[in-house]
Length: 447
Image (cartoon, rainbow, N blue to C red):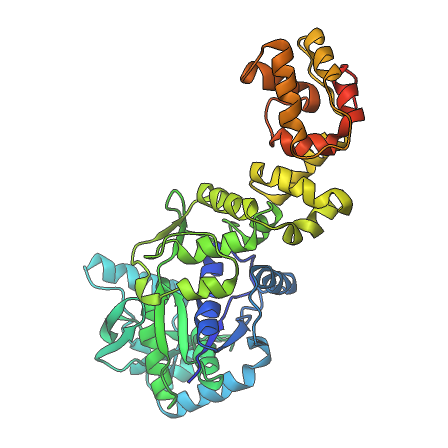
């Protein structure tokens, strides 16, 4: 059966590279197997969810090349969660609790002070009907906890292998807040069941949630999907990522000019047995993803590695792939391909081509250290038309005339023609600069 997976971000901030890893793992896993990808916006937190973040999620996924087959919002599906909650209440698995956050915190501190695990003691289950009525008469409204069954919850994780969680080590989770709104857990479980999700692929910070969710699925009579919990991405210094703090946001990486395939390849392959490498498309990347080969150690995302990977993609990028962006930088179509082939090996990002077109077009302020040398070089400039062989022929003639060679020959010519001591191979740039501009620059004129 073809897999059905879901990527379920909350629209409470901009996606970061760690979110991209989860989105890519799901999309690539499904793509390699002819499956379906559901984008589910977990927007039940109405206080923090924002339309602009929902729109940004869609933009970021589109930039990465991920096209969900279906998109839903949890805020449109509350009736499903209400029905599930009523079923759990009727089965005695969802019970009311009246403790305030302050009371729970004091209880937790006492348990820790006695060397006990801070697990909820189920005091609410011992309340009589009269005690509950008295609390409600005080104005308290209950939150609702799911009663976990004792014993071991076990599953075979597609990344971590055999996993076991002792249910007694966990507090009965709160599924419904006192104001009637839902926390993450129940909507997620209900949606996974209703949408026919076959594989839940997510970060390892959800491992404990899995034990709870398996019990809820069982209580609702729903099938249990396969689970895969991948390692998390950190910054190069080992710091965890946060949407709130804006760490390595996809929006920021896009605005910085990185190629989406470079970001996708590094986000997917780092922290796995596969060597990080450039890929031509997401189909190739899907063929490299093997959940069983994902490391258990954190995956460090280093922008230095991203720069190197991005440069390799740019250096191999055909003109057709760069043409649209070069046009936006002001490079005319008639010069575009020759210009791109001349400069791409000198770039780490496509946008860096813009200043080099400025060098070609001018005006450039030439740097002339020896006017006599520049004049002799100008006199040796061949007539046009020029091509990629012109630079070698001309520099050889200047070498024979002046006796200079190596850096002593090439650097003064580069400084005169471009005003810079570095840059792309002049064999490609010289025909674009042209004879008229070259003569003026060798004469020390801004051109």
